Image (cartoon, helix red, strand yellow):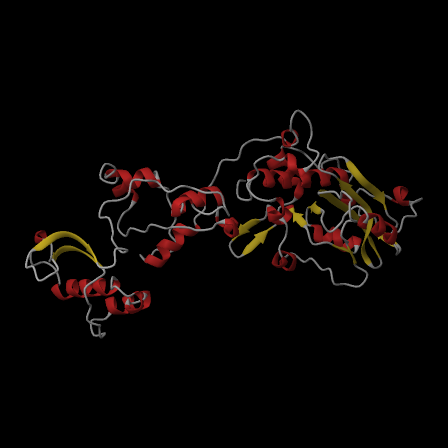
Length: 414
């Protein structure tokens, strides 16, 4: 039973123990097969009681013919015709299917293929993942035996280095590292103008974004995102957005940015801006705070006393205008919109927050990157650099362009 090359240099009891456990794992009835915890216990303790295995559902060897004939035949034997296994690898690569359409001919895509296309952040859109784990097969052995493993290499391609989650050799850690590893992708250099190119002109609707990886609403905040990022819609005075009137054509997506000053009651709204998917201004209004101003916050807001001297528009008037432009069906884009919506006292459910979309995970903490930094890095655009404060139109357009980058190329592309 043992390989002759081992001679007598092996623990016979340990080998028999492994064979015994292996036979228990391939019993005909799945209900009597040991689970993973039982296998670990049996491998670590010789004193644990073990069931006597019966003939497995599939084996390779000799079988007696029926009818009392004493002749034997060699080959693979399966009692139920279902558990028959091929001792050689199948050469046909699995067919990759579109998420939600089901697998072709029952084949499931390889785990590495699914990871490269969808990534771990897109788990809701992955119908099935198959992981082939071969203990002892490292990258060097895999590449050196390429002729012997030609079928496997054709299916899986070249290996990619993965950082182990632990220095201790452990099957669970290895599998976890394989399933949760990150593959860095090269960021294509795109200018903001290229985002709007569609048949020679600017985008007029989201439908003109061809072949996007996922639905646009996939990038909107979840209930947990709202909670984790300080969105508070249950405070007194908040006005909810409403469904669009029947037969109307509401905006599909709008970008929002607000400027605030400091009053005796805290931060209050002084300017609100909305831009559409073309980058054109839909709304840009100055607002008079309800309480006396203590600091115009000019170096950030760009608002001065002269700008607000003749302004009579109130927060309540702006709320009425806004809910007539932003309906429940409209996707609202912005950078750290929890602050803008707090100043507006408006609640809305469909939000793409670029501060969350581009956040940097550093261990247990998530760091939000400034809009100015993101615009320079991903849009090659300088904003907020005039020295006279922020421009809400400029900021809204930058947030919109950053959101469109993610929508066009995928959440984990950059």
